[in-house]
Length: 109
Image (cartoon, rainbow, N blue to C red):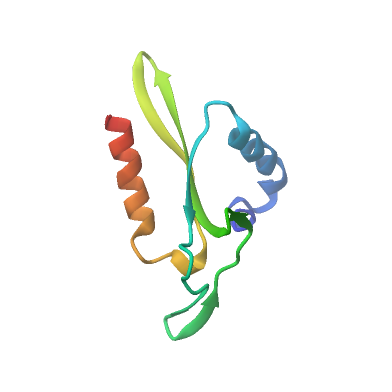
């Protein structure tokens, strides 16, 4: 939902590319779920902001994901992060930074 703005008028064509990337066999994912018993409404900067829950899995709402791939370029193994998406209610809490550190650790292993 938040990708149309950055891509502007090119989004319809880019969306097709992104959708193909997301289902590619080499795509790997880490999904972030809201723990059971946590409140879906939080206060950020004195304004009320609710999580926009789009996916549910095993009763827990998915509030973000990171998509990455392992690729070999010029005989060098590399890891690329294709997407890192977080709902507004979990942004600004260090989760994105943690996920990037986790991907770096996975890549090193």
